[in-house]
Image 1 (cartoon, helix red, strand yellow):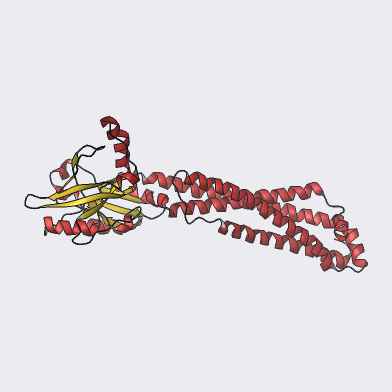
Image 2 (image 1 turned 135 degrees about the vertical axis):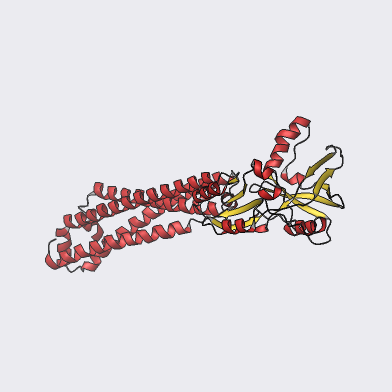
Length: 398
């Protein structure tokens, strides 16, 4: 009964408009925060991190074709690159100093195959994912190999089609073993090998680093060749600096990291604009909402003053207004959160269908920030309402 009296002259249209404005503002705020969390989770995921790694080498020119040493990086050059502002981590590619031949005997569904190849190795921290069977111990005669994912695609959609051979999946190719021969003019060793993983980041045939170092010591003892390629982990949003540095030094990379940088810049700029718009809408909604409450109290000032004369305390009258504010704030948060949850689930499912798993993503920070902003919103409007009611109780007019 008391609440009906206090809201008897409420301007419904203005009140609904203020609530809808608040709803839109908080929805945009939560959408922006959630999009930011999604972006950061993507950067932390395997798919996002792949864009932060690049492989660089010196440009091949007529001069360095005359000597293999000229195409390699000196320790001074590696140190200079390591100290560059855009580099978070760096490692050289270790390459095989011997010949490598891989072969597989003929079977019922696969012909005899033999090919000359090479091996390279990098520290495990630069791999997309360390396979379960990755690793090598001294004395073992089996070599695990990681190949680029593009190699499998080239076989399935190019070589296999042209030769009338069956396609192979990632799981199936891991079950095949093959013979590996390492050789120089004075030494030959035989091993078995299998493909244990695939890489989208590194375009090379990778083996465990400790194996390759041990093999190089046996086949080419004392040979200290300069690395021809380096793998870099970039700091976020430093692609422009990297390309300027590579251009200045005459280095090159096959990775188009600058595209990732432009996407990152676009996301940051879009997020900032959306956050500004959401904040502006919330501030405007706060003003309209506060004015609406002030108008509500003003239009009901006679009823409020009569209730005070009848013995009702201003605190009781204020609580009736404040409870309505809390209820509306709760409804706004629930509706905004429901929309955000539905949209987020659709986005995560869309990314999962494209093999982008966001393992560390959580919407909890979004809800926490939105709740905190809403509490500030409610406190400000509540204080304004309390001031108006108290003023009316003391003076009998606004």
